[in-house]
Length: 106
Image (cartoon, rainbow, N blue to C red):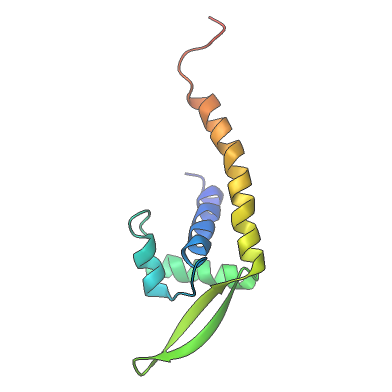
């Protein structure tokens, strides 16, 4: 898969994982596991990229005597999910064209 396409898909997946509630690294990986495997190093690279793009914010809170970073989606992150959903319709149309069996002009 094209690396840029995969990067964009993973970014949207992470945003979707924190869309309904603030979350932290391990929980994000756990929530995504039924759909996609994601390593911690990959996740934290994505989280830093999304934070730099103002698509999420980070807040540190104590949990069990340790500091834990919680991630919250921003308005820009929500907008990115909506853009992805609109783009996906076009991608599905292209996919159907590329994978169609036979040719109607035969």
